[in-house]
Length: 385
Image (cartoon, rainbow, N blue to C red):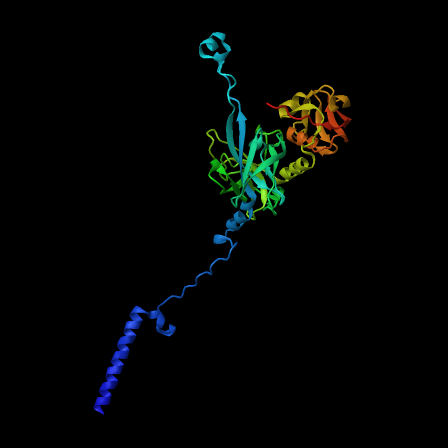
């Protein structure tokens, strides 16, 4: 009996010792009731492909838009100017006539956005202007040559095309008319040629004009870092839809200072469609020069300080405006019931009218209301600087 009691005591002692060791070193092996001081933690499940990281949605937006953004490399043959001393016959006598110098290749870079599965790409006019060769590098690593379909220097937009097998990843157009100051945006492009890069910021202003960058200006301003090489790239919203084509930056030294400008996607789409269909953009024109109607000008013309409209400062000879009887000094109030408040509105309103259409100009001349019919002409192509 004593022997059995001794064995039982030893077994209990060993069991208690094992329980103590397990409780100290491996408490998770014990039932939860024995671990009353341990806090239970819940870990999130691994993210599936395409799930926004951090709940922000920016990763999903970037992944949606990036395949449609391409890098553009252009080269232009530039003739090296001859040394002015070669105009001197005595200099040529001693040093010989070197003949015409060999043209040198000048390379530049930019970005573009695939807008259709069959290879049409939107970019800036200044990216492909005067380019002899254009090479496009896709986000998946493929490279191919491209050719210019057409361009519009007055909006700084161009359309190029590539030929590759299969459907290409085209971007989805967004609705910039529904954008607001403060909305988060992503800029995608090829800054400084380092490769495709995504930067983030907000819309800091809308409908920016009077910048002297293009003839027709209605920019989205953003503080998303945009640098040289981003031109022609995409400005997208948090859904990855295209809001604009990155076009220019404000910078005295060439680097990003947080002020970038993008051409709204709706304007880019209208321009692109005309270029694809007709090879160029056709706009209306009446042939006048105008000036903003300031309170001082309104007072000098005997008008109310709150008088809307623009002052006609010039009427081009043989233009539709001259044929209609418009004179310098007239105040243009409206075009076919569309009120005109500034020169940008007047320019855009006339440009949107098809050539050949007759419209009514409402004017104030010497304090009296005047209505003149005018037949819209075709806007001349801009002169190459």
